Every structure is written in C-alpha cells, then in structure tokens.
Image 1 (cartoon, rainbow, N blue to C red):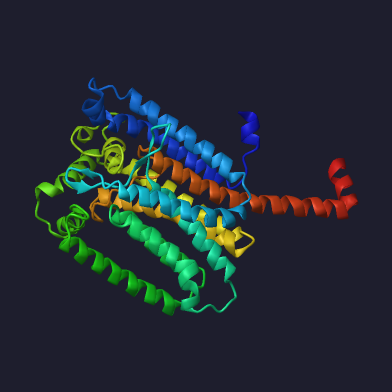
Image 2 (cartoon, one colour; image 1 turned 30 degrees about the horizontal axis):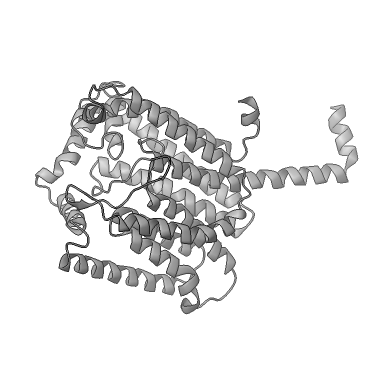
Length: 402
C-alpha cells in the first residue's frame, strides 16, 4: 500500500476529493439500498449491496490509478481508435430494443463471460470529449471552414448523439451541451456554433415528430420526456410526481442536521433511492449541512479542475481536463437540482456517490485522465529542477551542506 501511495501522481486535492466522495458514499448507499434488498433480496439484507458497491469502487479506483499513469498525449490516438468502438457498442445496445414497463430501455448491454451490465453511453461521453479536445488542439491557430470541420468533428459527434438520443435523452443533451461548451472554449468560430445549435434543435424536433408518427419505433420515450417537463412546470400534484414528492418529503424531514445515518424513512418509498435520488436521502439523514458539505466537495473538484487546466503546458491538456472533468461536476449539480425540484427528472446519478458500476467506473476513468494531465505538470517541474541542479553544481553542494 505504501508503495502504491508513493507512486500516486497528479493533483493531490483531486485524489483527496475523489477518496472523500467514495468513503462518504458507503453510508447513504447502505441505508438507501433497503428497498432494493426487500424487492430483490427477499430477506431485506443490504450487506450484499454494500459489498457490491465496495467492489465497484475498488475497480473504479484501480482504473483511476492505471489511467493516471498513462501519458495524456496518448489519449489523442486512443480517442480516434475508441470512436468506432463506442459507435458499435451503441448500435448493439440500441438494436436490443429492450423495454421496461412498456418504455424503451435500450441503455445497457451485458458483457460476455463476466455477465456484468454496462452502459455504453457513459463511455461514449468520455471518449467523445477526448476526441473533440484532440481535434480542437489540432486546428489551433488555423483558419478552418465549417465545411472542413463537418467530417472530422461533427460527423462522429452527430452519430454518437443520435445513437444515444432514442433511449437516453438527458445523457445526449448533457453531452451535446458539453461539446458546445468545449468547442467554444477551444476557439471554434461562434458563427459555426450557432449553426450547430440550430441544426441540433431541428434534428430534435424532427425526431420528436417521427417518434410521435411511429410510436412503435421508440416506445413511450418522447411521451416520458414531455410528461417530465409538464410535471416540472405544472405545480399540480399528479401520480407522475410521486418520486419528486417523496424526495421533497425526505429533504423536509432532514432539516438542518438530519435524522441521523441510517434513519431515513423515505428510502423505503422513494424509487431509485440509492442512485438517482440518493441526494434526497443524504439530506434526510445528514441534513442541510450534509447536503452543503457534499456540494462544496464538488465545487472544490471544479476549482482544482480549473487549476489543472490552467497549469497544463499545451492546448490539448487544457481542453482534455475541461472536457472530461467538467461533466462530472455538471452531472452532480443536475442530480442535486432534480432532488430539490429545480430541474426536471433526468435519471442522472450522483458521481462517486450513487450505486452503479458503470457510473463509478467512467467517473474514475475521467478523473484518471485529469490526473494524467496534472501529473505531467509535476514531471516538467521535476525535470526543470534537475536541469538547474546539473547546470549549477554549487547549488547542489549548498543544499547538501544545509
């Protein structure tokens, strides 16, 4: 363990925040899994869910550790290789045409031999952001027309978003927003971004009309989106508001200091209490103070992401940190906003807190990439110090004497 810790590089604050979030997640996941234990476990034993969550975190941190040792410039080539792979995975996932309760649920595939469920859209998000960062760094200081960027940039983005959209609108919308944010920061012409936004809006409208005309193609997905937005804007209580009403009850019960760890009541009534609505359970048990503390951890992560991007020595490193790191904080804020009814229900998990292997693994993958960029900065500083000592041997003697 000591040898592993000594080999850890990169921003130590980011390591600490990731570790704190992971450690903090055990109590709410253990507590919130009680309804799942009764539904699927039979005897109500939540220990197996805790062990599963622990295994997911261990594998996630192994991914983070391994990825952060890879020189970040390798991700330029890896992103090109992975784009066709994630497109194939998304095609296979969509082709399953699975349903849950009459609604399209083509989000998961089961990995062969290991039998573990995996959500390709989360991997696609990380790969796509790295790919866009690579392209933007490549055209830095160059004048590129919109036509020239269509094939190398917008074609992969469009393909991936169109494959995710039918089954997971919220994830597709988040990825699209993050891509637009990244190309804006990367200096892509604003007039071209406006064209992309307009085209994206028209494609979404066309998809909605197509799904309405042929409801058998995408069972109930558009109806689900519309009902969630209507429920959010309409203040009347309906059956569809059950989740958010239970979440608000949990938050109200929590008060300032909470009811105490493991003493949540709404965990037994709130669907997805260990994943999508775990923030409500956290506030119920840990109170307003616990909720604010958790939010501050994500804000600290955002602050260190900005620092890591600023300190990166090249444009690719800067854009890579923002591209794969910012969606983590953005997703966390959306999850919290849904729990307190500041945003329509989306089904986004709370990174490193919610249960679910795919979410944890891909979050750790993204953080590992960020740490790879920040560790390179440390290596450059070490190389400069070594060079200075070689050029000034008297300085070395002085340090030994002191």
